[in-house]
Amino acid sequence: MSATAPRFADVEIGFELPRLELPPISRATLAYFAGSSGDRNPIHLDVDFAREAGMPDVFAHGMLVMAYAARQLTDWAGPLSLTEFDGRFVAITQVHEQLHCVARVTAKSAAASGGSVDISLEARNHAEELKLSGRAVVRLG
Amino acid sequence: MLNRDRIGWEFPVLRLTVDRWRLQQFARAIGETNPVYFDDAAAQRAGLRGILMPPTFLFGMTYDLPDQQLALKVVGADLKGILHGEQSFRYHVPICAGDQLTIHSKIVDIFAKKGGALEFIARESKVHGADGTLLAELREVLVMRHAAGAAA
Image 1: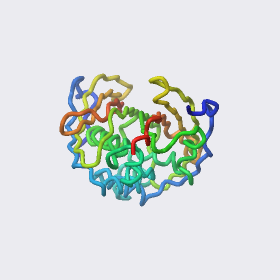
Image 2 (image 1 turned 135 degrees about the vertical axis):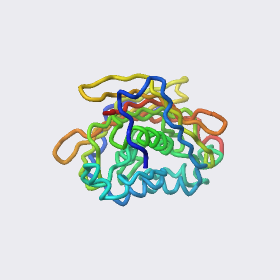
Image 3 (image 1 turned 90 degrees about the vertical axis):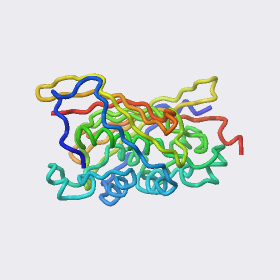
């Protein structure tokens, strides 16, 4: 579980969130994610279907990568902090790829109490190939 | 070419209860460890009605249809050619296990790029709670690759 969430006043523009390192995405992870998320698309589970679709193998749900990015945000800002989250799936994440998430504060907007923090984020693999590009807004006290 | 007449097509309205076991499975699948996603006592200490829905979980609920491919069939898309292009969430109220949700989804645009080699389906969803409060909004763009499946 994360430490106490940062205070709005203490956050500086340009701050890099703690990097999130992920284990290689196994076929088991794809199965657990498919079953629990409810996304039954066989392209993530069934190598025969994936090959019929012209893919070399099953590949990860974009939403799995976005879930990892969300973890990085809520680990830092707290589980109830996220108000906006946008992602663009830039490239397919293949099975066995190992990703990391980076995120940086780009703007702050004060409210009556605390305020909102804009964050730009990316998920990349070990070769720094970009998989997910996005932004989020978190509310801090 | 996807069927442009389907712009504005509305999904069947979904009335669903957030399933506690499924939230826990999802949290585990994505490597979450915060007790608020697993443990009722931790959720209660955080002021929640039940364990917390991990933020991206909501997307899957918008496709909790008996036929997940219904929209693809309606617009004439082939599952083998579909990729998730973009996804957006706006969160207004935290959602917890046991919450009763009503989900309205609609295809809001269908357009093409690269001379039609790529087509895009934009869909928006609104999620309301049992008392009618707007809890969250989602928008996604799916990408249809027309060359997919040609190589086998």
